[in-house]
Image (cartoon, rainbow, N blue to C red; front, side, top):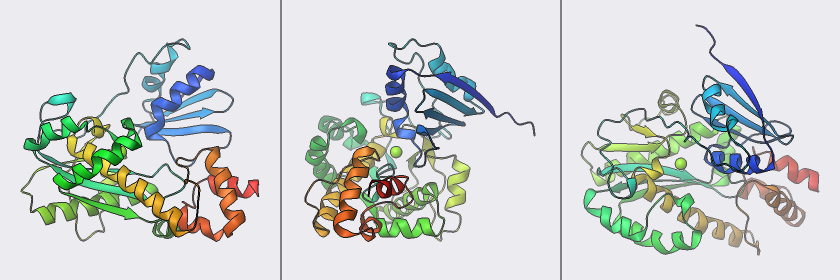
Length: 318
Ligand code: MG
């Protein structure tokens, strides 16, 4: 088969760097090449921004993806939206209030995969049509578009009304899986599958649209869960599903809420007085160095994701 892979290189100034960071934030990879500010994977294209401003697109869609940016002056916003691929749309329904699909559905979403500290949390939620107005009135949308204060306020109300299953993968569990060379996408696939399976089983839901916020191609997802005894198949994968499916949006809010609570518990369990920082930026490294000074490096295996580049950065600060 002919290799359709190609590379396009552009130059980014400071203003464009900011925009790129915001635009690709959802798709960041946890490992970045040396001298890179970030690397992101979008459908069939890897985007790498280097500290020097070199902006590289690689893969089948390199040309298309780079064209979003190549025609822009520094002050402009992206002219084109990222291509959004929906792999399987049967039963996905038409658009209802706030642009959400108006179909009863089970949906799942995860948080914590880009945070050096804290667990990974996945939640599957079951939202029926009759509950749409209640959820829209509460202001339910993708958790990344809501403040943590708002999430703390509305999540308990959602959790009371909406059947859901949440799975928290602790840092020791995560580190143990990574040590067995189970990669991040496989971990996510296994957790999504587990939550979806338990929810469908417990709620005795009839055949229904099952939506997963797409983080890898469907074939890779199914390969990752192939060895599981209990599998949920026939999934409708959507990119940006938190914006299109209320069940996924609820999954994302409940996951974020649980993540915030778990971060508090982690702090309490290890006598960490300050708030543990989110993300994987420089503040996280400094905080990690403080922790290690106080408790020894062992603490990181209990509260952090040991395969992140931050571990090395923390060591350099010591
Ligand atoms: Mg997601």
